[in-house]
Image (cartoon, rainbow, N blue to C red; front, side, top):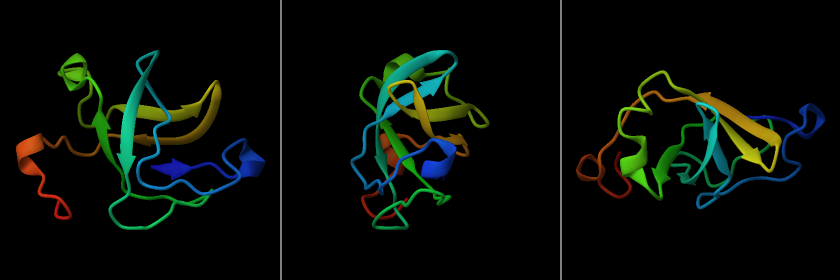
Length: 98
């Protein structure tokens, strides 16, 4: 996922694991907890790998698939964008070792 710079309308400060913006796809906003496994913080303009955890994962089964484009939003402001590259199940993730 790529975070927009402040000049492009994105955040002016960094994001950290635990960040919970609006996860927007297919015309709807959802809450998703983000974890950045490769960095301690994400600065505007950075492209990073992110793990997303939905608060209601059952609502997304069959909806979020590999290739699904998404946005991170704060209100109506787009702060980052990306697409799904892999679907992990809770049993396929070992803390600290995807």
